[in-house]
Length: 84
Image 1 (cartoon, rainbow, N blue to C red):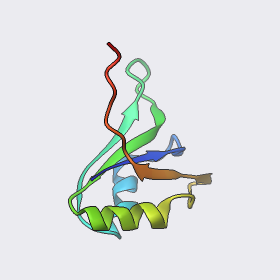
Image 2 (tube, rainbow, N blue to C red):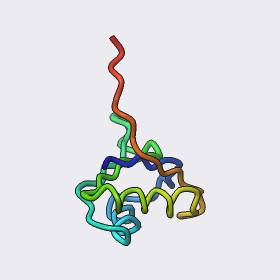
Image 3 (cartoon, rainbow, N blue to C red):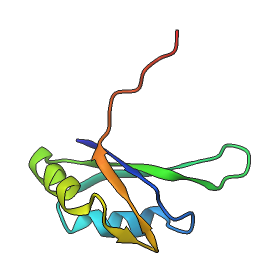
Image 4 (spheres, one colour):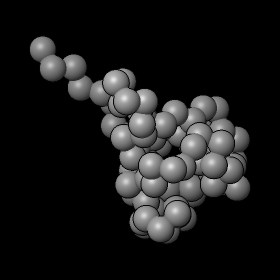
């Protein structure tokens, strides 16, 4: 399952985020979205987990929790919409 994680601290890196989610199960990938010009984090990321049940537990447990001084938003990522 692909999970959207928002309102992240700009100081957080992918290894930090992986550690937060690894408590709930196997992580397939972690991608913090960065500005293509400055390279700075845009404050959100996508975490992919192998097991849907573990992912749902992570979403329920982590949504609204505080990390690095910010309350994060965690939910199932919606498929990307192409603007045609």
